[in-house]
Image (cartoon, rainbow, N blue to C red):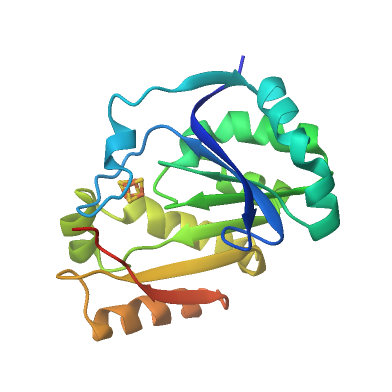
Length: 202
Ligand code: SF4
């Protein structure tokens, strides 16, 4: 049975991670180890609650009327929600278009992301950097899976369902690096690109 390891469920968010009122489901685990990860404490040894697809859907449905009124829905975040690829796919099948489904991801997981993106409303993709050495220095791993997944989305013509987020990371990226990442994703046909300064907590 497909299960989620849920760290927390954050309700009644407004225009922060998807359209309208959203419920953010924060899932445990991530293959990356970003130097300034704000969720570090949540990645190792955090208490989680195991939930089946049906249990999670029942919880989420508490806010169905807000979703209906605002066009909102559920957003899966983490950690890296694509580690729960099959559970999310099963969840979206059950939702069957009743409300919006968004996935916030680094795309650093090998999964059938094209099929998932076809079923979901939106991916919010945290690219970090398209430069392999910056990415490795910052995350501790290579960016080959990310780049291959971006290309798969591009070949499938699903760029319109994606928001690409490119952070300016203190001590890791320069304006030129950001420009190169922007050009890289533009060349793949992505148009909704959000560049921002990544706030590092003291
Ligand atoms: S991808 Fe996100 S959750 Fe994973 S290590 Fe990086 S900042 Fe933390």
